[in-house]
Length: 518
Image 1: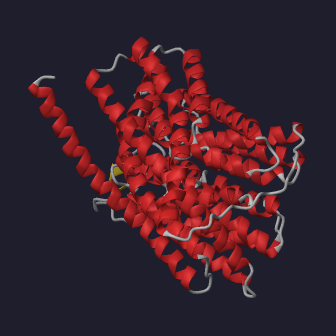
Image 2: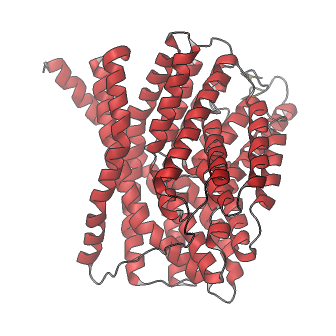
């Protein structure tokens, strides 16, 4: 190794340490509010056992460290790799090789998605493999559709109207217990593994166009990748007759000492290292083959991406251990205790409060917010995106708790919610529509699957509801409400533009075609 190479790599290490400190600080800022709220609930109206409390606190620490490492790894590996694969898919200027690539990559990355594994484990009436393969195929097909949309410049709003119309027509022929699972599947597929890759893939594909709307059209891939699994699982529900629908409660280990606590996490850690390794392996193998045969990226870029994969692997394993071992039992117990109170209506405000803060702890939310701010040159700042997402998830968890308490059919909420979001798509600029529907998939990540879903299940069990019909669907609600709140942000920006004096320098979105300074 030459002195120049050694100096360069030392510079990378220093830069990575700086970025890691920033990302860990951001993760702490995201996890701390919801942790404080949980602790206050545990010592006041929702007392839980000391074992649950200790696992929750240890899980929060792992969440912070894991999120910091994961977001750093995503910047160094998943996003550059997605852009490279997207650029390669369009290099030949032929449709069928690019479509095959999108289909294959979509299936591969979705099977690798930890959120999907978590949901499959909690769905009692569909075999895990059947659900995972069905969802992965749905993502692959619709990722190919998303490629065609970008290549041909098709307006996203028209595709969304058509596909969601098909969703709600099919929903009339599906058993009631399949509906929440189908819509939940659309949310969990776009998690921390999938989102950075798919969004970067969109940038790579859009680079083949030179018109002003190319970057704008890179948004919407996550949106379409979320529709595919819903349709696929609905079709599965028509042709598949489910088996046992009984739900197995979350197991909470006995912890008497600090040594017991450490051993609980140490015993779980190898399992999640294995899961993440299996998740990353197909992507690494695919990229390695593509690099050797077609991409031919420089050794410097490949080395940096390899380092990024290492960060991603370690960060995601720690994150999943924290949420599954620490947060899942805490969410379940919190819902169960609150649901057993004489004033069980408290589930609504508590759920809304937790939902407001918990979305900030989703790893993929940071990736989306950062990319949106960069591509819009600050016209849609991260702070505005975060606030809109928090308000949306706050509302969605409140509606989900209302379903738990009343047994309200999920379609009573999904139909008007999606109707309003699709109506807004014809009012706001296209970019806001793409960002909004992407945000729906991003908001429903591992924190939703491993904390909010067990929270709803615990509450539903306490009130005596039907877990499959009433508790499942919370992921779908979390995926739906940001569609409205982000597009409402677009309405606000349009209103702000109309009120701004003509000579005042305000950078904003003014049309479907461009972002300019007025």
